[in-house]
Image 1: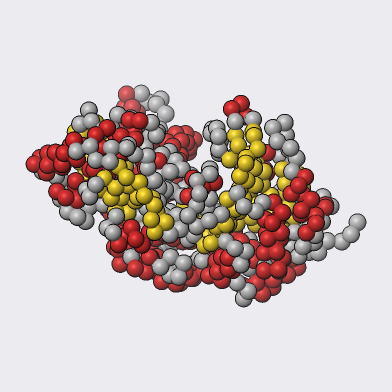
Image 2: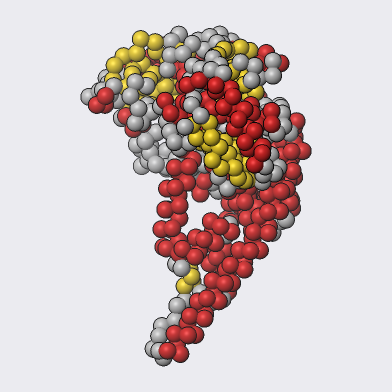
Length: 631
């Protein structure tokens, strides 16, 4: 049996490699290298769109680089052509509790490139291989790839495997995996594109854990660094597939993951995306990140949640903390960062300086809107910190009420029955209320309880938490087009009515009114907008009358595509900005309403019926909400 290199020597070697790589590439260089490489292959950089979902793909945030391009992958011509590339910011929060380890982030960037019915497998495998081996210097003999193994619905992807071998990938480094690993499709849909994908892997080091150590091994030696999806089929009823006439390529490489890998790191929080903020947290807390434990976890959560909050507030369609929808997700992230700042023993206001590092040093070039909105972003941070500090104090009082209630019950019951067994645990639902309403993590409740001689029903907490998580997932994943619950006739009419409502509010209240959210079902519309006070009864009736006036005029709803800058110069409202590259979709209703929007809309306003406002109320600080119907 051959001797193994001691693990300590492997770590030393890895550390030396890491120091060498850290001098090699920064996040800014990686973004530029990706774009310049694909531009050299005839691609157009279409830029990034808003992190806030425009509603066209059914989710609240953009969760994948290809998501904003779905209409074009489905066949709509893209104004920039058939070869596209970009670096797209994404937000995923359905697994927020996983943040705190070395690899989970709520905000991340996807480096992508696409072929819309142009080149296919031969060109794409060659370009991915060239990028990885020549641009990034990876050893082709260590490079591994996975392809679709085939099933009863679609054949084994021998074609991609052949191209990989011809490029120089060793045959033993090409793996055939099943549909769960190497197939992409939108679940629950029919008529959408789908197909096999080709994933790329590379070892972190040369030391095998066993003789059969390969990409399927659980030791973590191999890292997935990106994938190329070949959309060559269309989904049919009954789990069947048919070949697509126009085949697409969808490539996705995670910038955060790729950056860590190229710099020889297994901890994503050690790249230059986070190093400045982590160093700052170490300085003000007096704790060392590399010591691990709870302090390291807290620094990761603070850094991640602060970064995502900066991005969401500073976005072109920026949101603010609230108790509903995307604003609720943002509030949860910000308050979780505050909570963990307290565990490090630092003042919550220090998060403002962490936010400034992201704005001024890390993302100032890639996201130039952030420096422009810096004062506004920091102002929203400061307000939310103040709100939560007050809430925490209320939470402490709620905890004391909970304990005092148990003690009173124990005292009363003991007098009634000397054999009564006193309660010694805080209930799971009570613990979850402290978590959900006041931001108390279970660990904090357990610590406070222990000081008073109590335990906490952790199983009951987990049950309450899972119930809440199911509801949160529904919120995080369930926004439809433009806030629509579906795209039927009734919701289409109500969606068109929101355009008239938005324009009427600008006329009656202020030209600075902007849409801050919407939700539309077949029965009613809900429209959120910025305004500092309740509307008077007279203002409500005036808005309602103006909308109905435009409906009676039976004005055509006119669609047009135009350059983004032209739309802005012409005063077209950008509410939920459907900007793909430099061209936007617009809908005009005479000279009354002109908006950028992804649709759907009726042909003429006369199809809408009678508009009636049924409720006007507060939605969040500085945000009002109108509910209305069409009769």
